[in-house]
Image 1 (cartoon, rainbow, N blue to C red):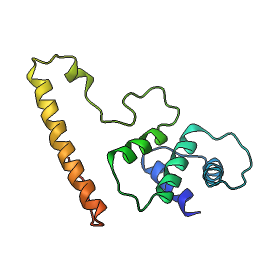
Image 2 (cartoon, rainbow, N blue to C red):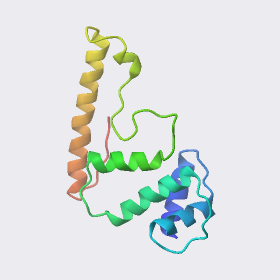
Image 3 (cartoon, one colour):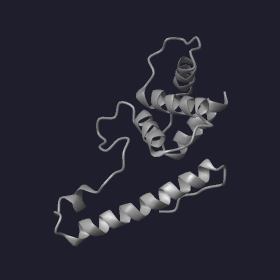
Length: 134
């Protein structure tokens, strides 16, 4: 199953080893196919949900909402993470207060990155090769 292999290899690159049987069972479940009714760990469930959504919406325009949705799917069940499904902002910089230059520099860097990000999304949606360099 190609989707299963993609999910397994992607997770492996990130240093996470998934259970193949649970992953395949979760993918089958998300496609509405018969499964062995096993309990699926959150990591396998999340990446399966994301890749099935990608499969079903491959020709839809890519936008922040879709990327944030995928991020939420991938972090399925994680309670140790903050800012899931949205842009992250450094807590250290924010804790310094509005009058501090670090916060202003951070906001400017985020805005530059966001513009590059949206430009790359537009290029990608036109079917061109796209890489984001922030």
